[in-house]
Amino acid sequence: MTNKGKQTRRNIIEKSMQLFSVKGYYNTSINDILEVTELTKGGLYGHFKSKEEIWYAVYDEAVTIWRGIVFHGLRTVENPLERVELVIDRIMRDYLAANIFDGGCFFLNMLVEMSGQSESMRRHILRGYVRFSRLMRNWLREAGELGMLKPGLNYRDVASFIVIALNGAFAIYTASRDSEIWRQTIEQLKLYIGQLRN
Image (cartoon, rainbow, N blue to C red):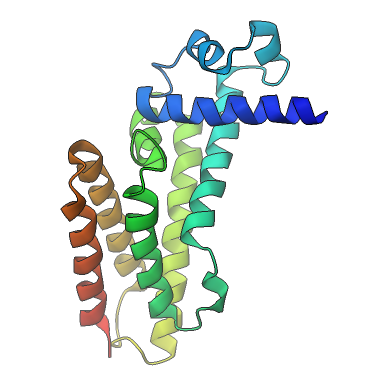
């Protein structure tokens, strides 16, 4: 693919990402994408066979953006509880509150929209949530093995609670744009983790 072709493909992905984030996948038409990218149908279909194929490329790019924000430099953080708290902080402050996507959390928006609409796309999104929850569980287990957490904790339940709390904050912040939502979420989750410490 030529540099121009790569730039065109990237433009389609970036513009479609914001459209899907704000309007939703099903409310975004091919004509909407043509309008924001200033392409013809032939130009668009030269890069993607369908709107669904665009969505999968958009999803992958959204994941790349999210990972770049949330996990940047995290390999140097040896303390697993510091990793958990840093990720919570970055998700709330640097991802959600920074309004990376015009419509709020891209993944939550897409998960809600795809439920009952597209089983394959819903499962695709849900796998990302499961992987993230599993990562949090592994860090918590690591902290437990180091004696940093109280014995007998169910790391899976703790990780699930953190993910659920974050997503609740996503929904309420997106609806209200009240910065107290993400600030309180950071504070309360850190207090919760503090109560689990040994």
